[in-house]
Image 1 (cartoon, rainbow, N blue to C red):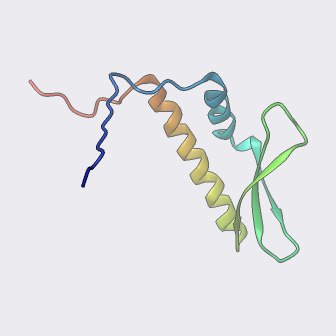
Image 2 (image 1 turned 60 degrees about the vertical axis):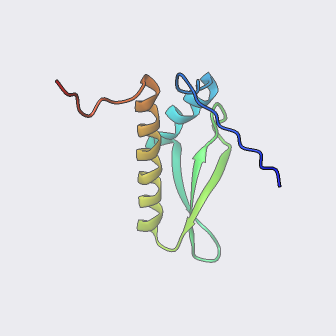
Image 3 (image 1 turned 90 degrees about the vertical axis):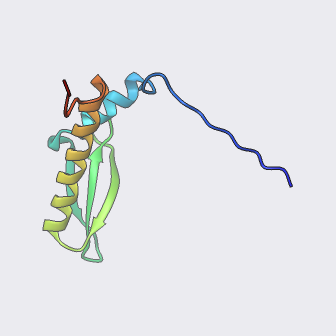
Length: 96
């Protein structure tokens, strides 16, 4: 029996394209989000598409308004962290 095994390594972080960084910046601002109530009573979180004021893209559905707002806040936190790490790894401890 023959097995194929492959590994890869990077000498640096994968490079993020400008469009991805612009999207993350856009999604990290609460003004680009909204919550709508659906006919079934659920709440849907949506974000505005980049460079298109009237186009909204659905993201999640939640049972409560508070749950929907928490989902938006969590998403914003997520994208803020992604933007922070674009500058490289964060040093958390050094040794002498």
